[in-house]
Length: 157
Image 1 (cartoon, rainbow, N blue to C red):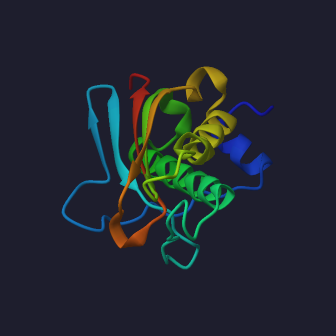
Image 2 (cartoon, helix red, strand yellow; image 1 turned 90 degrees about the vertical axis):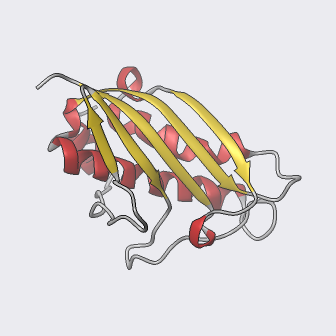
Image 3 (tube, one colour; image 1 turned 30 degrees about the horizontal axis):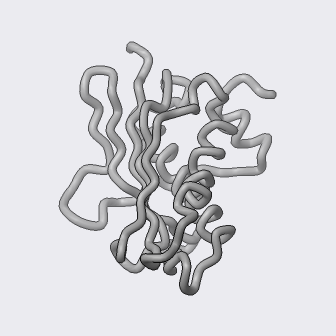
C-alpha cells in the first residue's frame, strides 16, 4: 500500500472533486486548535448536480453506500483545501451520517459504511477508523440521499 493518502487515492483511480462552495450561510470547515470540524456534505455528480433519493423507497442500500463514498471524497477535498495535505490528518475522530430514509428503513449503518470504508482505505486503519453515528432523517437538503459531517484531529504545524 502506498504511503500517502494522495498516493492511495491515485492507486484506487480516485480523484478528489473540487471542494464545494457552501449551499447556505455556513463555513465548510473550521480549524480550532488541532481539531478540524467539517460541515455536512451531500453527494454530487461530477456536473455538480445532487445525488438524491430516499432509502427504503426509491434508492437501494448499494446506491446509498455509493453516495456515502462520494461524500467521503468531498469531506477529504474540503479537508485538503484547509490543510494543504491529507497527511496532516492525525485521525478521523467522529463521523455523523444522516440518511434520507423511510420510517421502516433499518440499514442506515450499511449506507454510512460507504463513507467509513473509503476514509479507512485512503487514510489507513489507524488514522481512518473513527467513532460514528448513523441516523435516519425524514428529508435532507435538496432531496439528497445522505449527508455526512466529520471531525478530524490534525497534526501540529
